[in-house]
Picture 1 (tube, helix red, strand yellow):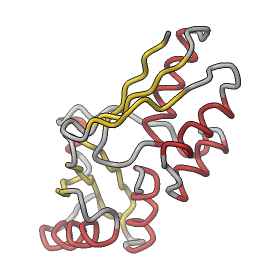
Picture 2 (cartoon, helix red, strand yellow):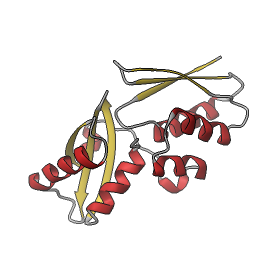
Picture 3 (cartoon, helix red, strand yellow):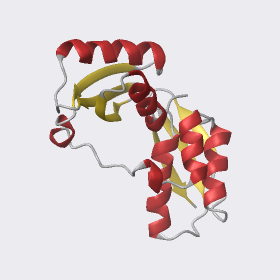
Picture 4 (cartoon, one colour):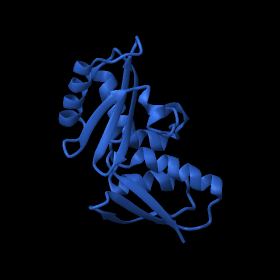
Length: 164
C-alpha cells in the first residue's frame, strides 16, 4: 500500500522536473498532491496529468487532487520530517510500501523496543487504524511514535494510539 514517502518518490521518479512534491491525506480516502517545478509554477495541464498518474499508479482506491505547492500554507498542512531524519526501520517500510499491520507494528516495535504496540482494528467508514501500546513511554516518545506512524500508514487513512 502507498505511503506518503512512496507516493512522493513515484511522482518524482515519473516527473523529474518537479522540484517540490508533498502528498497529504485531507479526509478519508482523499489525497492532495502539492507540486511545483523548477520555476515555482505548475500548469493546469500538468496538474491534471499528475492526478491521472496518481489515480492509476499510486492507489486506485483513492481520490486525488493536485494543487500548487504554495497552497500548503493556506491549507495548513503540517510540516513533515525530511527522509534522512527518519530511522532506517521506518524509512525502509515507508519506501517499499510494506505497511501491512505486521509491517507497521514491527517497524515501531523495532525502534521502540519496550512499547509492545499492537494493531487493534480498522474502521472502514472513517479509514481509522487503531493501535494499542503500553503507557511506559515519555511524551517525547509519543510524539515520535505519532510522527513515525504518520509515515507508515497507507495514504487516505488515519490512526490513533491508545496508551494503556
